Length: 161
Ligand SMILES: Cc1cc2nc3c(=O)[nH]c(=O)nc-3n(C[C@H](O)[C@H](O)[C@H](O)COP(=O)(O)O)c2cc1C
Image 1: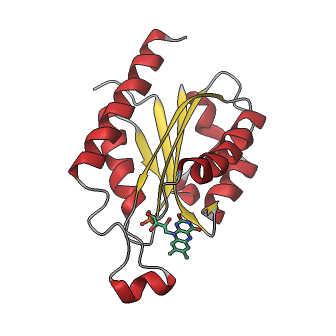
Image 2: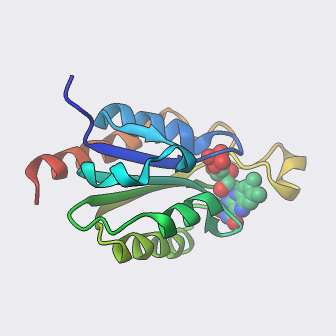
Image 3: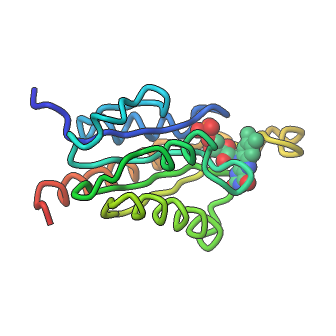
């Protein structure tokens, strides 16, 4: 099996929603899949691409993802992509958060290919009383869309644009 050329770094704890998506994308890309604290920063430049996955907490990526992006070296030459899960999937709201992740990655020299966001089961705060919102998500359709996203990333990496 060829050595994975993509590394995915994710954080996910609430209902492991983002982890579910991360595993689908990692499998399709044959990517190495790590939590931020497991990453050897000095080996990052060995990869062709870095994917970042995170749930949204208080309108931000997980703080470990924010710290990770601050701590990585310059990775000019690597491609990047992002995926999130969240209670809200209001396009403007999520794009605002993803734009900040893109900006942090671009500051480290990464060239962003694309991003993907989807619903995640959310039982935080008052939603808990109602059984949460987005119960059952990510569902099979969400996973299918995540796989299509991974296909797009794979094709871009193969074409080496
Ligand atoms: C402490 C906390 C804060 C959250 N804040 C937000 C938020 O600001 N906006 C939102 O859309 N969803 C919010 N959510 C919902 C999560 O983004 C959603 O459940 C996500 O899928 C969790 O991902 P995970 O299971 O991978 O941790 C929050 C969830 C938790 C637990």
